[in-house]
Length: 168
Image (tube, rainbow, N blue to C red):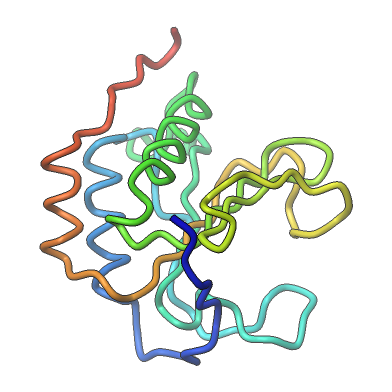
């Protein structure tokens, strides 16, 4: 269902929104150790722009599948499969989870984005739109700030993500 996109309209926050914290907790529980938090709350502008990043609102995070070789973050093979599965899950349950946008920095030529005001349909970028694309080893996710931690946990409990076999 199409929903309005919030973006950075609510301004800078004092920290990470509980909805985002809960979403990441459940996502990492389901896709550990392949996916990890590559950065969430931080008051700053978007790269190369004068407008506030949604990260500053506390409602955005970058989720990486990069293998950090520390045994705690990432996997040697198959990390992208985990990321694809997680993005599919977030799109499928976007309304219930309050997901507003996903940016996938990997696909050539310039990445792609799924957004709530387009019914979470993917739009492949045809020109340089996001810094880090193509071949970025992370995706960006934004939430609307309207869901409780309990609601997020319930969505994952009622609709567990499919398990991805790494290296398959």
